[in-house]
Length: 534
Image (cartoon, rainbow, N blue to C red; front, top):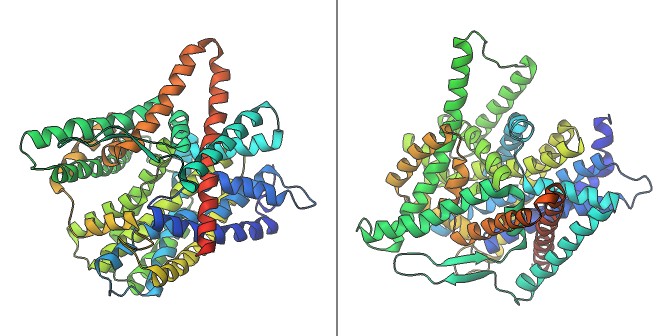
């Protein structure tokens, strides 16, 4: 087995660092510009593979894997910051949010993200074996690029088609991003489809169960629940009913988190009752180190931000919960709603401890950054698990890359704020941060959220994919429809070619990986071009 040194080498550090700065800066810009962030996983895989192969001594697959892990580390850190903090300035244009405070919050989120990833990796990747479509796409791309066999033809043909399609849609404007199948009415939203090769590929890769649960949640919420609420007079218009729908979706995700905690407690009590002990295998040195890092992060947060020490304790507990949800949802769906988790934690803390307006955004920022990094790390660890890379090498790369990415993210955020400002009518509307700002202002239906929590706990304990259902209820319907379409196409092809099931599954995985990778690569390249032009 190769040593860790051969996997995380000096050249992988410098190649990764070069890509890290560019990817982080471009991710910050596109997150503020579009309110969305393409996963950079396949792009950095291709970039790492290409650059390292220019060296005289050829790289191993594991060295490439660690390099792209390092290179991508800052992208979702930037996303977590971009999706939260600009909302503070939208609500208070003259408000002060010191740079030191931003640095402390972002670095703390990155450290906590890697820390909790190291705890949850085995359960989510090795035990539950969640799909992690982006991580699997990175693995398939790397293997196809190395073997150059028939599998490479399927993957790279799909990737090229996806690149051309995305360039025509986003770069040239020849293809609409969203198609309206059925117009909106006074009581229902429009039935729309996101014209996205990536989303189609994700639907095929995560499979029918997760895709149809997601789509079912969206249809039930948008086309059954909302019309009933309006027609029965519970709400006078779509706006009020829609806030109820969003609150219900948030509640379902919170309920899933509480269900996870209850399941752990019930399991441990059962083990003690049956004389099996706690079942926990704790390395005292690792536990002491983990506790020391947690304590240092809480102290740093309470000293240099508007979050009190008591709130920092609640914050770490909340992040421990939502980072697990983040890793679970990323694994099940390929989507990581990091700003939603930021909203969840500051709502919970705000319910038991009074926070300042800046304090609320601080809580959301740390949480979103931690959740963003968890999603990125887990995708990389999935590809590493398939390749056989040491998790320690990847986590070391993510730790260093996450902290460097945190510093770069804050610098780029301040530069863009001073240059353009944030909000409607500006160059950088930051729509996700605007949603966080609305939530911080109290625009959430508490009743719906509590109902969702109760339903979420029950469904999770019944082993239903409740977090995925909640995501479908919360998100716009156009994302859900294309995921369902991808899964439906896979089922149709399997049905038509039932005698070649294994071959069909293999080719479907390669094509889906190419579709994911192509749009992801195009999105990152366009973001890099945009940030360089700025």
